[in-house]
Length: 284
Image 1: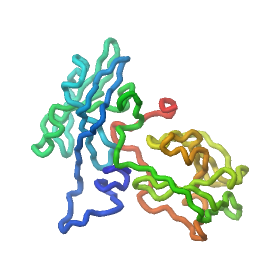
Image 2: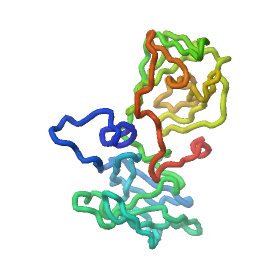
Image 3: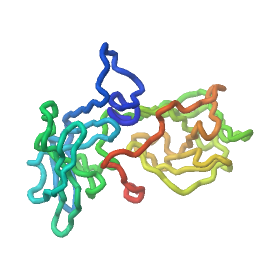
Image 4: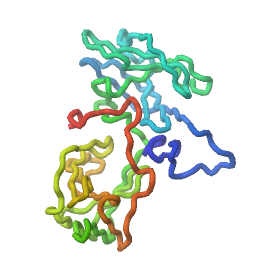
């Protein structure tokens, strides 16, 4: 979720609401200092290196990092004739990025006619995530998009009784599931492999990537397409669900203590923003 994405507080489909007497604007942007050293890699060179990055949270998009122009390597940015208009921040000038013989068009942008209330972004430039070779916080690569401090994954063990059925067939039956609470999403229930009928799972092609959990494998469950998934190499932050299996409650029947689970509205993940598009091969 994060602050502005999915069902976050500043998103259009926020799951909660601000307890204020007057309606809030339909769109609210939030800018804050990142307080982390961030670097950008392109053409075998570090082209930006800053401890003064501002993170912009915009409804329906992942957060975007804005670097002071003074922290960008000289000669890297080549102004283009392209000028677009941001609905909230005004005219936006675009740049090509060049290092030696390597260059890419429309790889960075700057808001050049900011309204007075958005001064935090003045004299700053953002780099298109997909166009760069890599982004780093200190010496660790950050993939997918700029890290959102408001996005959390909390995992809890429980003794509740979870049963998964596909038609009349029991696919999983456990009293030792793990529940993963991810910001903006309904709880996801993960079942130990020992409590899953593995013969009911048919591996399918098409892995997906989560910037917070890693690469997911998918399974058909009987006639239900891609109804289960697993993170065989889940990242350390969510290592407790590594190898466990979770099931889509809108594709198979999932019962928790006898009650059928149904996915709440607003749970579909839709790619948005210029910083989307990292391929599975790049992640691996």
